[in-house]
Image 1: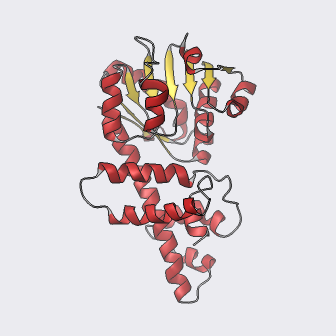
Image 2: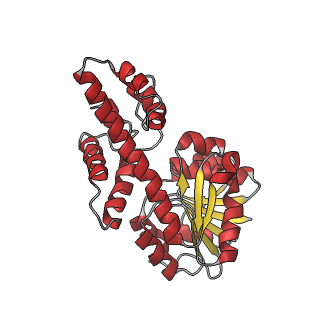
Image 3: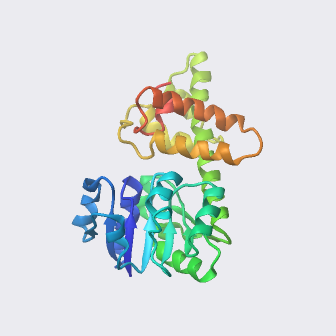
Length: 279
């Protein structure tokens, strides 16, 4: 298929590469043009404007920073050509998803769950949701390469809002877990334990997944810059969670406080493990 792919940041680039490898013809656009270089080398055409990118597209895929960018680039200018399915992977709130689905009747929300490592291996989770069953299935077939290593993690749901909820739940688990690892390191230190010893003691606990994911950063085996998933990105998602929930989310709020402290320290574009590294 001829695909317009808008948003070629770190995750967007990995998603687009899978589509190229699946045999699709991509035209890509990014505000910062040099971020399209890897895709150009892989055979994608590079457009100078979003309008140019979508002009001959059979399907449009967006991987943008957040809902405000989606409004600016896609919704407000009426970018999506009539009848063309729009598959949006951007992390947004359920209310945003309802808004975009109302504005563009071909809208399908397909947020991905996972970081760059799983993305490169085709091992992401993907929620696919939209009002039109045929377009949902079209989108699900398109994004299969993103989840081919774990096909059970490709989940089709009835609405864009439900897909958005699934993504926020997944990222809530990340945010709260890194906060838990940070606090575990504080507790271990209070009893004289080095970080490595504390992390080892988190084996077979509910924090083991996050500990395994971020231990290389915490132990100095990897640098947090550039990392896999930035502080700015997950902090933006946590704010969406807090805005969506009707009840107080104190653990999520504590996670946001830690993320905000890293942003204030100038580490917004570094890996969100910074919360536990620079504790």
